[in-house]
Length: 112
Length: 110
Image (spheres, rainbow over the protein chains, first blue to last red):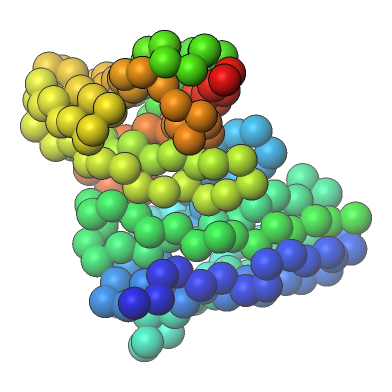
């Protein structure tokens, strides 16, 4: 039973570029949430996807967008990258919104 | 907006000592979850509390949810080196998101 899979594991981008991060949820899970975790901080909620729609969004600018596919996998897109976007991006899946989340190992994004 | 704070921010204990971290929300929560994140790792789900005043135990770990559903605590009895990591609470306030606390980083000295 595969857990949450994220790709890539590490990424280095230049300011102004665009990036796409991918997430495959745990088998049987239908809800995907994305979090940003800066070094030494707690995860910050970006948005949650359910039934291919964004149903909740955190305090992140429109440069952050996402998508969920019919197989429940998800993508996080960030446009016009800033140095401050450097962080660990975590994908979490669950069966219901209020069930315990299963987190992936994350994508470490570095913007230079 | 909703905020979730944890204290202490850091805690160093000798192996065998007890450890407690406290979580406080600015708003009433529908439920609260606890996660552990090892250094260099990702958060791992420990437990969920739903009822006011609920207490749950997992071996040496005891979790409590406050009567007003605005605070929670995690207590570890007789810490071991395997308990090292950052412990996060995550509060759910009726919207489709969990707000993570600031975390308590535990270091256990052998």
